[in-house]
Image (cartoon, rainbow, N blue to C red):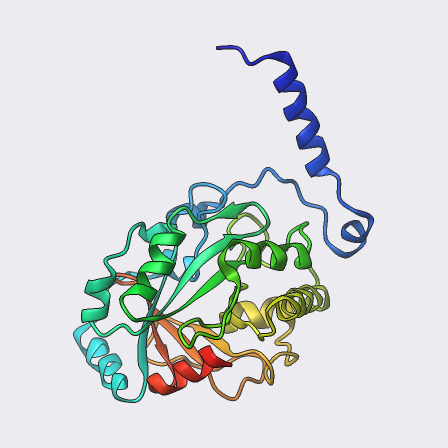
Length: 285
């Protein structure tokens, strides 16, 4: 059925408005088309359209997703001093939270937003479901700096589930800043430009919530795209991604990690670097 001419004109006008950057954006962010397409590597990781990206997608793409019995035992031995968690996105769909709780998971992060254009359709089931079974939960934002305002993305995140309340069960938001699933690894930024973008996002998030956000990244990406910046290691907790028996060398001068994503099999699994009382302490601020 043909659309009415008025509707088509309105849609064209709307797209034109979206494509025009403000003067501030034009001078602070690289030019980039809104018509994003996942790279071949991203498609192998299950990212088939804009918005599908998730924490650790590139590690997932290159990982065998099989954990040897020896490695499993090594990781399980850490549970005595660390607290198991998981992170989820629309990629996982509806999560059986009771099953995760019974398996020992005590905290979880859910993807809320990506860029300034996507919200997770499963967010309510995932974010509220983890809370309802007793977990301490948080929300995360998958950053897409290419041609997009850092402040606007922080605002968008807070408006769509990324806020914080001191209820003892809500963790500060997490900025997922990692490999670009839609193009160049560093989103077209210089190292100093990327540091500025990250700093702007974090400052806006703190202005809105009063909390310093967690930074999720990998040592390789952080070194490549920020020049291994040490600008955040005294304010923002580090969530390191490395699928191995240890988190390895940490980036950016962080003296220790707060969270560590160590596998995506059969779901993204993480350790909090401390017992449950430390998870509560981070939630309470």
